[in-house]
Every structure is written in structure tokens, then in C-alpha cells.
Image (cartoon, rainbow over all chains, first blue to last red; front, top):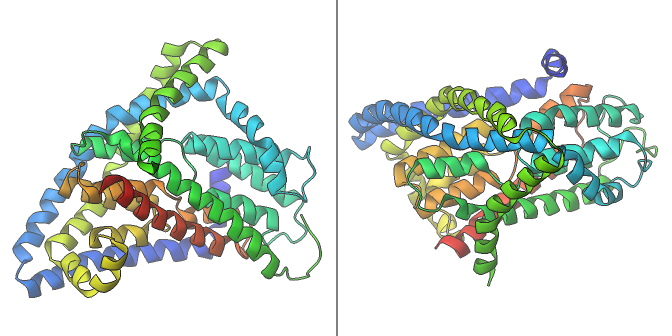
Length: 219
Length: 178
């Protein structure tokens, strides 16, 4: 399994990020107790511990319906081959973003598929496809422990997280009494598009400054 | 004008997407109802699986708010936050977003639970969560899968995109929901 291999690699970076989250979580709890004590609000802090734990289950349970609906729809999209259809339609753009990769190289199609799966919110399908794309890119990467320009571009686009419908977030708004939870779709689409455009511009500009160890031309 | 266009997108995206998915399914000749049920079944698992993450984050943030710490941050950073119109409640969210997806979702749930789904700050938090991806997670998984340890400019580009997405979320939400 791809995931197992990734877990085995267990690079230092992941540990660092995990540690950071541990510290942030600890910081929130300890600082609330200290600040609450000084503010004379320690009783509220204690009460909130209990009520927040309860609230999280309420939210999770009311989310189930919306998530189930969306996953049902997405299963149809997946089995109907919608990922491939979108991937095909964005292929011309994908080719332009990776000018050094041959047009018929499997990496181009796989990256397009990863993008379309992410756009549909199918992260379970997108991750294995994305890992496959990385393997294809690694085959044409001359320095194996260092990211190639194509990899950086692909992942910068990925970290912008373009998504058509943020279903879980809509579900949480609905669960907490929103009258019109889907009204965030338009603003979210604008924000994630700006993130996407910024990622592409940033990665293409930084590519010119960020030198490779041997400085030779690559994909 | 922007408001009308965005409203139009918001109202139409979901119904149109559902219609096109179903039509694609008809065209591909797959059993629609059965396939739907197969996918929807996973929803229960997902809903239950997120409970531990929600509990961890909601308790921490709930305590943090109850202690008055968020008011302290608001007072301390008022000159900056007021200038860009950012509520102090979403500041922890902006910091966590690139680090942890479940963490960001947890903070957004806590804000929506505290203020209700109709409040500006809840909608803003929702847009912020959707505005970008968990940069550190994406880079770790994908680079890890092929053994690349030197990320070069991928991390900075990803973080620049995060800032752009989060700032756009703030300004578009102000234009739309205030």
C-alpha cells in the first residue's frame, strides 16, 4: 500500500509538524487555565470543557446526513467517470503548466485527474492518484532526494486546494442553524481561485530563484 | 455587482453539479440508486470518525474563549485587526489552517457553535476553511511518497497561496456578508 510506504518513510518533516500541533493544542489548554485564573473566569473554563465536548458530538451527528448525501453523489460521479472527463477538459492547461514534460507523458494525465478529483472534493480518490503522479514525476527527476520544478508546481497547485463545493463546511453551518448554508459557495470559490492563481504565479517566480544543487536543466 | 454574481454562483453550483452528476451517471449506464447508497453508507463512518478530532479542538478552543483569552488578543491586536476588519475569533483559525485540516474544521465548528451559523464570523470562518488546503500535510504526504526530502520552493509557494486565500476569504466575506 502506498500509505504504508509513506508512513514507513516517516520523514523528519512530518514529525516536526505533528510536534507543532501538539504544542499548539497544549498552549490553548494551559493558557486558558492560567488566563482564566487571572481573569476570575476559571469556573467558566471548567464549564466550557464539558459543554464543548458535548457540542462536538452534536455537530458531528448533525453532519452525518449532509456528508452521506454528498458521498453518495460523489460515488455516482466517480463510477460515471467524471474525474476522467474533467481531467480531459483541463489537459491543455495542464500541459502549459509543465512545459518541460513531454505531452504524452503519463504524469500530465495523472496530475489533471488529481486536480479534478480534488475539485470535486473526492480527497479519498485524489490522494492515491496524486501519489501516482508524484511517482511518474520522480521517474524523470534527475536528483532523487530533491523536488523537481514540476513537482513544486504540482504541489503548490495542490496546496491551494481548489474545490467546487466545500460540503463538510456547509454541513457545519447547517448544523449550527444557518438559514442559507450554501451562500458560502461563491465566496469560497473566489478565495480558493485566488489561492490557486497565487500559487501558480509564486511557484513560477520562485522557480527562477531557487537553484538546484547541480544547476543542470531538468523537467 | 460582485455580490449578485457570487450569490448566483452560490445558489446554482450545488443543484447544477447534482444534475450533471446524475446525467453523467445515466449516460454511463450505472445503477444510480444503488451507487448512491453505496457512497452514502460511508457517510456514517466519516461522521463518527471526526468526533475525536472535534472534541479535542472544540474543548481547547472553547476553554480558550471562556478564559477571556480571545478578548485579550482582540485588545492587544486591535490596531491591526480593526484595520483589516478581522474578528479576533478567526485568528487561531488562520494560524492552524496550513498545519491541520481537522484542527481548522474544529475551530470553525467551535465558532459556528458559539455564535450560530448565521453570524458573520461563522460564515467568514467557513469561507476561510474552504479557501485553501493543509499545505504541510499535502507536502508531507506527496513528497514522502517518493522519498523527496528537499522541498525547495514548494513550501514557500504553498504558504504564499495560503495567505492569499485567507486574505481573499476575509475581504470577499466582508463584501458579501456584512
